[in-house]
Image (cartoon, rainbow, N blue to C red; front, top):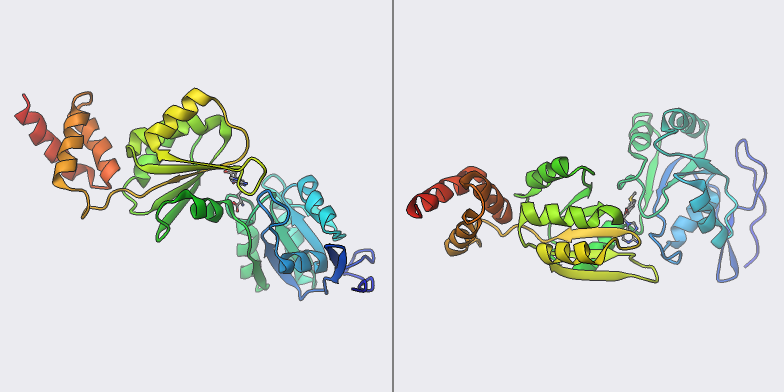
Length: 308
Ligand code: SAM
């Protein structure tokens, strides 16, 4: 394929608007003004769409969370578009600048270090303000660790709830997990390897032995998926030490009200009452089954009464 002629973008030096795939040079034509939200790979650099490459090559500039990280992707595909940092520490100044450039007729692409921007990554305010300013906003979909993890976890995908990162401190984390306990959907969390063991312990404590999966280093050389109940996963990572790489925790849904049989509830409550107060036993079992705490509390109270 022939190389596209260098074209001049507003306010920039002339440059090649093209990208390389398998040694072929493909033109990335200039774009209509506006914001292009572009998903990039979550590890394997081949996981990028042809449309994403074309948009990145054709944009006037690319707003990137960490320009050093994004430069590797651009170098791999021979893209010469200038990079401009856009992250939580400079967004207050970078955002009005970006909005001005788009109002002046430029096309800007937004990318993050990995996966889909705005998903536990910067960009929401920029999109909101671009929309409010009447600018065109276009999604260029692609990889996201959430969907990749859901695909391999082996847990229900008909409904899922994306939580992202839990609070780093245990008390706040447990409170948050408890607030999620009754959601009748698979839960998805992002977590740092250094906190995995303690977060799994808190999840097991608050949610019981729900089925779960740890998806680590997806799409990379050391990709691994470990599927087991939460308590077993917590025990594994407590013993194994800190894992390497990036991690998604996927937790199966609470047993639904219809499926949690009376027998199972009573058995779980009786077991919990062996070590916990009526209040705590009710809280733990209610969370595990996705039932209102008050309903389980009265049952726990009755059960505790019969055992005196
Ligand atoms: N925007 C990204 C997306 O669409 O998934 C997520 C960005 S968030 C700052 C980074 C977190 O995503 C990591 O801490 C990890 O929990 C998860 N993650 C990213 N890449 C991953 C991978 N290859 N395997 C497993 N988890 C990954």
